[in-house]
Amino acid sequence: MKTLERKNANVLRDPFGDFFDGDLFAMTPDLRKLLPSLVRTATVPAVNVSETATQYMVEFAAPGMKKEDFKLSIDDNMLTVSATTSTEKKEESKEFTRQEFNYSSFTRSFTLPDDVLPDSIKATYLDGMLKITIGRSGDHNNARKREITVD
Image 1 (cartoon, one colour):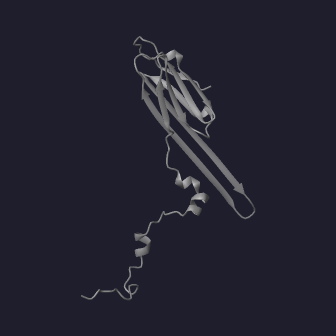
Image 2: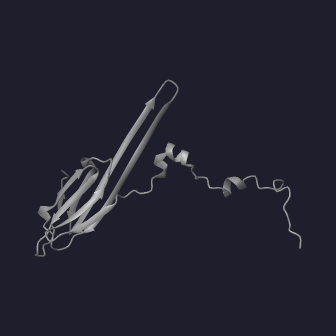
Image 3: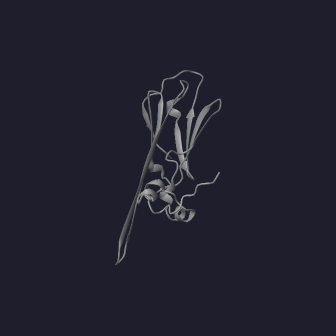
């Protein structure tokens, strides 16, 4: 049996075939270095939650932020952590003007156990880590509504 070959494949080729069939957003490693904002993969920081006999600890990996970017609150035993950042970069020269904007935000909510002490919640931001400590007791308290400041 003879193998069929396609000859002159370009003669009847769809003029838009390469455009629609290819991966338009494929990036080479060099392009990734030039355009780091296009290859962001995560918009929500990683979180570690742990507990001891006397407290709960929640840690967010959030480098590049400031403590003023965070908002923490408690409402009906729900701890909500959110942050919003924005940056603007503008370059001007005689020949061109380039202006870049970057906005990011996230919100994470955690249902608190009944044994938390809402007045003992403390939050600190240091070296890219937001650390929240929540005291606990043996009793079952209901968390009241409150906002927490980040130190």
